[in-house]
Length: 257
Image 1 (cartoon, rainbow, N blue to C red):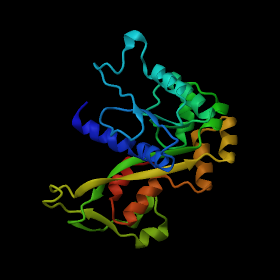
Image 2: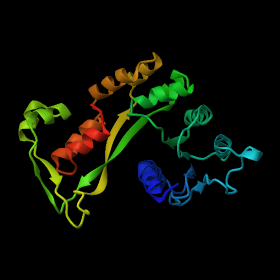
Image 3: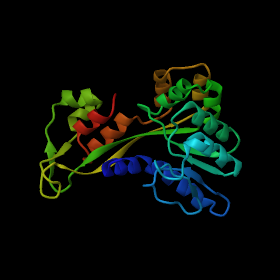
Image 4: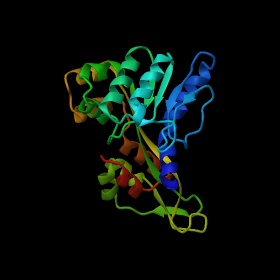
């Protein structure tokens, strides 16, 4: 794994680890988080961290010490919080769901296009709809976009039609001021410096659970979640365009309408 990949993986999992850290901080004397993370992740106080490293003694396929087997061993320790770096297969998904149904707080990551697609992804893995509806409480999708360099940013003239096509309303397109970096020494002439996250948070309400139970598609779940107030990745990005934090090109490249 290249050093750049390490940085990307660390930034992508930061919200999950931050959530566990905040919960643990509230009940430090009662909660014993258990995690499975790559070696680049920082060690959390009071947590047992079993790390997956190829060639190291932490995982031994020959003796049956696999990802799922380690997770089953964690459950025998009766933890309050279980932090699973990534749900990769049906076996890990089943154990994580069962842990959530038996009173454990399970935090994990999954590769999907958006938050509502997480439900269908778990079902495609083989998890029954009633188990997904009962175990999943909150889903947060994220994308990283580049920040406009604050040292060299300038207003960017964009046609109103392009802003409407990106997702702005016709009224907003008339007043929005987009910014773009022209390039300077501080940003190595790229016009960008640093990155910022776009977030889409879907709370699984009773209405959404009913849709999950009947096997609703990701599109139907998405529409219902938006009706209930969910801010999509595209909407999150457009807000940052309005604030001059990132460019319309970055938002269009990383999100879908």
